[in-house]
Image (cartoon, rainbow, N blue to C red; front, side, top):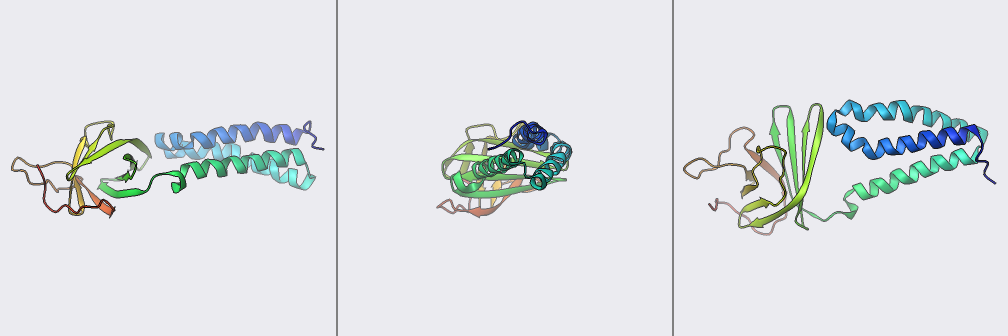
Length: 193
């Protein structure tokens, strides 16, 4: 029989619920400022671990059940966040900037993920795309400003953001993504304008 009236159980239950909520919100906290993502884990996770260790030594089954529930919840969440349940990647590319990087992933099911990393955090954009010829057309805005246009061009091992007035790709600093993995069936070597 599990005693649910113990102080360890009640304390672990409260801290466990707060910890799981912080865990689910950790991506948003990291996006805002990476330190914000660590603070809840330090101030809530540390006491929770101490309480669960005490529960192990006192053989408090109710508190241990809370600990097991937390671990199972985190494992299930990680399965849903992982690549296991997502469509296959057909193109992976990176744009390097001053102290930042933008990672673009196109998936087989016509969904994209764009992660903008900078020194203070990151921001993730998700949406739908289509491919026409050598052009990737974002049906959902890929960024919160006009830095990345809604249409980019695949040329050799690059995703080009813009062209000059004569139609040549602009390949200056931070004007293109470098393609790291491309499973799109056709190879394009010249721009189609």
